[in-house]
Image 1: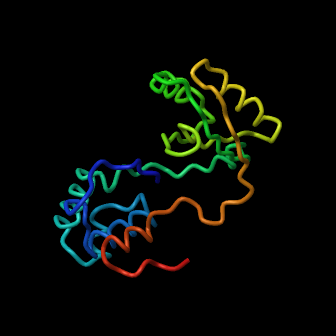
Image 2: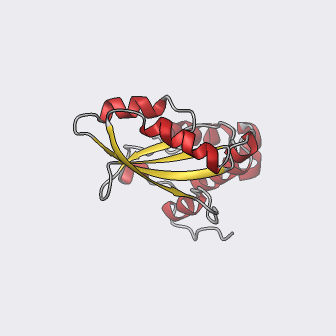
Image 3: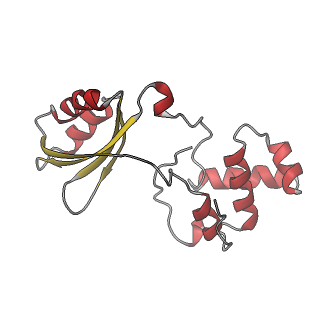
Length: 172
């Protein structure tokens, strides 16, 4: 489950141990129902529902969609492309990149380049096709691409959830 960056920052976004346990349970078993959550967490169903509603309203929990592995879909190659764009072309470049299915994420960045995108491809040779499609837009001036060899720490948020709740992050 990927949750986009939230504009909700500060004390209003703090969570407690029960929130953390609820998030951990939902991350482990996204199809679990509220009633079963309440049973396992040993709190009232209404408490779980209220906590979940509040976490969703604050943007802490953004969805319950399936985690899809691009490699299992036939896209085993992951790369990161740093893009330099023409001034004033940001919105057009964003729209262009949003239309490329192999672009999984796009971030505006500081430092070298203006945008960083995570892309996938069917093979190293197919990566060239994807890069050509990504940079084949007048608003993109230059691209630098790095192929990911391994992902030893996949995207995760549970250690951060534990830390935000004032607990020790889980190991492994």
